[in-house]
Length: 151
Image (cartoon, rainbow, N blue to C red):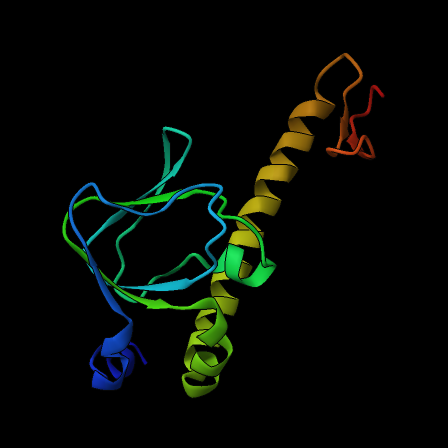
């Protein structure tokens, strides 16, 4: 699948190059394009803190804002020279129809992230249950989302 996409001259119109240190997109941006790493390495940042790296050729990134029709949740910055395919938001559906393996990769990526997030939340709940004080977690609107045994 990857070779079919990266080596397809019809997709050259989506090819975008970045220099070392260049920002691909900023946390909070309204852009919603989907990216596929063709070459190079990227840092993923929240604020000034590095939270992840993207270094596998064919890696998808930028999908959260594309799928949720929302602002960027992180900043992505080139570590060195980088080439990507940049699929504009309005063309993502047609692109996925033309390359259905991308949808499979996207589904796998989201499932992995959900599993990792679930493990973190489970660990946090286990930790909170060990605390002698009551802990109540709420969302941004004040709705209770979780509580520990002491609560």
